[in-house]
Figure 1 (cartoon, helix red, strand yellow):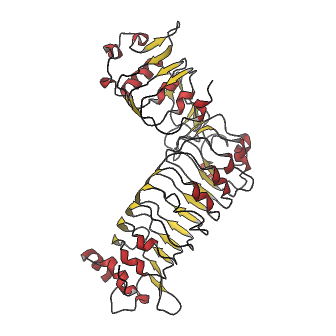
Figure 2 (cartoon, rainbow, N blue to C red):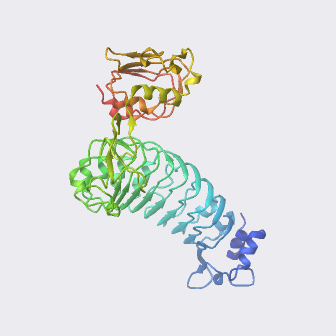
Figure 3 (spheres, rainbow, N blue to C red):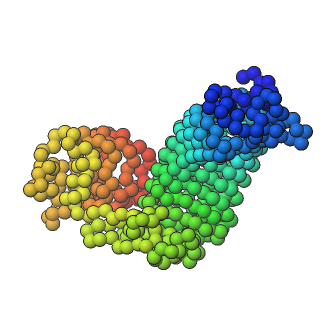
Length: 437
């Protein structure tokens, strides 16, 4: 990259017919006008050095160019809510003077860049199409000791949350919602004593909620954990969060009850219009479901599950069947039963008792007690509804082609033997399953 003038660097944004058409409708954006007088450009007190570019919501369409890295004194860069596409140039990320960057609500692709400025205060990359993992050391106090706001939400990021994020102790807002993140919440997040807003919803995060989040010194006001795979219970210590305004846990795999002290804190006041008590505004209780048509499925206006169904987790919007025959039929369909090997046609015979189906054993009362389907070419993720078989003691699905995570629901039946070896199951075994005796 050969750097010339700031105007040359900025004009690389508007090359081509679309860019020129945009530039022609804006003040400046040509070589005949001082760059400090261009639309969206601000300069220092001398009127010669470009310090800011703010083109938010200006209907700009195009790519961020490598030449932007020539703006070596740039402090603020805002191109939110446009039609940016392509990857983020590392040269722009390398600018050492950068304070605030916002390119949210675009279509930028590629990996999340590693930024070079130790003066960064805000990095807002939400609502784009970034892929890959969050850089392990890209966001850490060593590089960004003053970062206050980090937004990577509504992208396509995968992998786990880097514990190094917790070293940025000035962080006040962390937004990681609506990605494909896995793993657990780092226990070191308790070090973020200035954190006010933590948005982790709509991922595939697992594990229990770390107690380190719920200290009396915490400044948390908004804690969005909904639509994940968290298991265990909602800790009593959550009521230590004296500044808490919103907490959402619906659509997770949490059991038990809402701590009464939390219900007394009058959180989630935006849902005061819903029928129910203060606890229901946080999450519908176990064995109930929320009524349809609500912004948050699983809280407020709760109703008990119908007969022969259950909802074993807090904040459910549906109730699952406990009818064992239907569970087995759903299991067969979910795990591609038509492709199973060595199975007789009795799984498709509606006139045959399920106790006589291949691999199924029942006790004297006709309840399914064992499922043994090893080496039979089962594929897909393990059907979570198997956890609703209330008398299941043995589950052997070894040596198949199963993928995904081990369902928390398998902690529900009285299992004494579980064998899923010889598959491609990923992630950690939920602690609530490990605790079964």
